[in-house]
Image 1 (cartoon, helix red, strand yellow):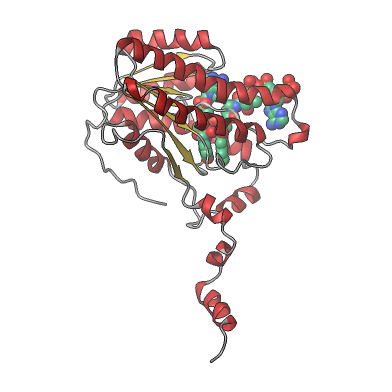
Image 2: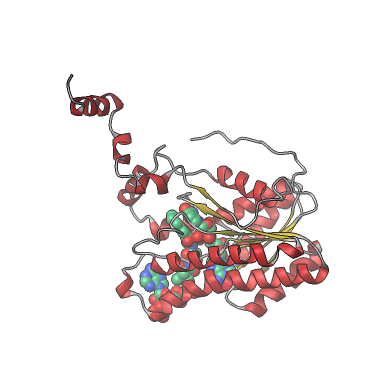
Length: 288
Ligand code: HXC
Ligand code: NAP
């Protein structure tokens, strides 16, 4: 367990009005609370009203400004309407975090076209709809802004048994990188963050069923622990702030070294007792 660390000025995000898709639960909720705590006005959207209302109440209780609207990001008109609603309460949105996602475990040959489509619609189309809507409003108003997409650490490699997610997260990364050059002229920065495993009910109930899979996942992290939400939200806050105006088209991985570990042939040695590992390596050294 890592102790929360406060590196920022309390007004780091003053002047920012941030729309977070899927901001009512999991990592999105943690981002919403953290950003509001640093002075951003925060709007959360998702399909279920209850978690959105709860998140807004938690932000307001802590002294922040927040609003919510229900929408399914698969529906471009619903996204525009939700944006109208929250802008009516908070003023013009100048930041977007594409966080909403759908994912589940399945052998790829067993996926129905509709199962594939549901993840493609939420992640790829949902990101496009929200990004286009926020982007065109920023351009129209001649306002600068920041857009972030939460992808995953398998965005480069792909991943077995989550094929729809792997395919669309790569697409979302390409979207952010394409816009980094296209929208730089408007002062809009677009970036992506790739988390490794961070416990949430939504992800872990679908992707880590049973303690055995969770144990296996832990073994792939060199530090043998999952990420804590504050570690991710610090990175998100920095990326979305004016502390990083030159950062665009970037992908930052935050996974405790998990992706590297998985790709390194001899990484398993790091899990052996170090004295025994050294003894084994010394035994292989030619004698003089
Ligand atoms: C196979 C499945 C399935 C499963 C649903 N389907 N779940 N197929 N295995 N586990 C199929 C259904 O049978 C249906 O196809 C189609 O998918 C659509 O299902 P619906 O239930 O109608 O979809 P919908 O209500 O739109 O829900 C979308 C969802 C759901 C993606 C299926 O899981 C959801 O709402 N997820 C949101 C939250 C989420 O997934 N969070 C995890 C994010 S974690 P048919 O053919 O029968 O009609 C993440 C990265 C984690 O992204 C990285 C590592 C830890
Ligand atoms: P989560 O708890 O399941 O949250 C997903 C959120 O997205 C929910 O609030 C959900 O709300 C919303 N959502 C889903 N479908 C939607 C739709 N069609 N329209 C609008 N909102 C929708 O998942 P999480 O673990 O916090 O993940 C958040 C992000 O981090 C995702 O992009 C995920 O891919 C990424 N990520 C997570 C992990 C991890 O270990 N947790 C690792 C890597 C990447 P409703 O259901 O109410 O709509």
